[in-house]
Length: 184
Image (cartoon, rainbow, N blue to C red; front, side):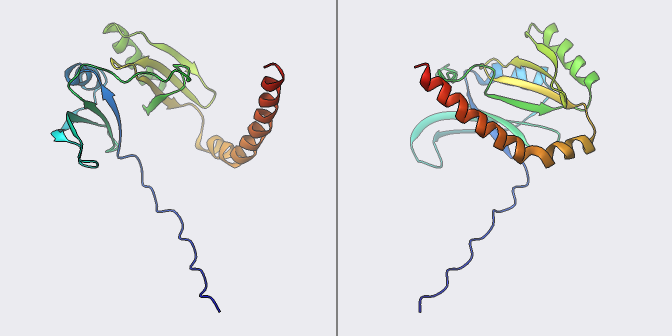
């Protein structure tokens, strides 16, 4: 008789974001934007000639900006003055990072500060559960500052309907796929 298969363990508990990293064109330009304009302090710098995970030779500096919850936004400057290129198959509004602030008043203050520094800002946009402003950092990364505009109870109600809503989208997507196929 074969030995029973041990149960598959559940996922490990993910406690939150540690950091999210992108390539940047210039670390000082990036520092100015994220620290001086957005108020995230530069807290750590790693400079190396070799990538620790792969061992490949690639001189870089890795810079970290801390958010108030202890997580970080990080960047790699590879020393070649090249920024990451946007995806050719994805609209510019899709890929972005959304960072939370505490109130609509703070969104308005951030918008005024950014615009005063010459940064174009879109919004405040009403998403029915959050209000948001949108802008690009010097590397072409779309950033959203957002704040909740509904109660926790309303968000809980949305959470209870989330799986059904996603199933509805899956069905609609199948129809869209068929429609696109029919029109070449």
